[in-house]
Length: 310
Image 1 (tube, helix red, strand yellow):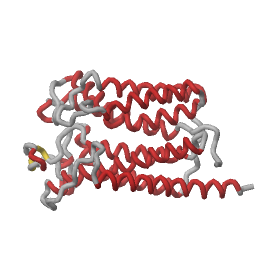
Image 2 (cartoon, one colour):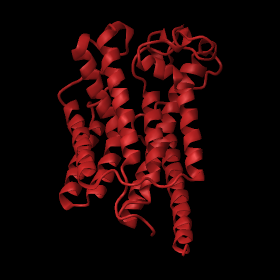
Image 3 (cartoon, one colour):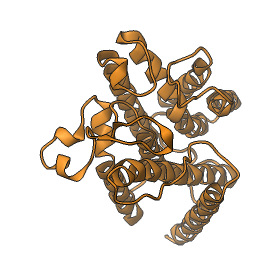
Image 4 (cartoon, helix red, strand yellow):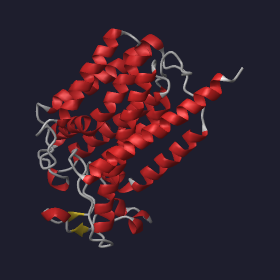
């Protein structure tokens, strides 16, 4: 496999920047807005903002942080770094434990600090990798990257209602966009919840999905540069699942808020946040496996072509 000795960190730093921007927006929005304008939170001020930012670091950013820790450890290239990445992954994975992330109560609790610590270790590993090995040279731009960039642009276009909500505003108040997207309008919520604004202010799991899908698309550039085939395949498989999971949750939230609440359709997509024994999750796993296989075949063909270059 034609790879560099260690993966570069340019893509990882892009993802860290995106996560940092969302964390800051969450902190500011939840600190300045009263809880009744948000969703399933209480309290107010800086404490509420910091607590909601901590919950975000657990879900959804800790899912991304596992991949970032893995990449940083490969860049450092020591057994200590590998162990630290493993510890970070275990701490981040605590969000899967029952009750750690509760959609009906999104206030921070002490248990949320475990995933936050995992993210902090991943960030420290990245900083260590930059200090010890440098950022490294990113891969040259390719045709696949143009498609990735187009996909990310489409994701963020569809996420405009959530981006506005993230910073504490309704997209429906914006000229032109308000004619395209629902937001401030009061609409009945599926599943027996009380009627709320079509897109409530603050964080949305659809935006979490956009973050996960975007991070996966960006970090796919790094997977072929991992030190071994096993690590490259493992990272590609993880990113494939993260991509499908992110897209599925973004679609589910957009479908509910922009189509079901508008009255365009009465058919709903079930919640896909938690893994379950369902046809939807089965389809997601199969799709992720096919994406990973396709990506791996492309990498192998490209590597053989590069090996023939004199």
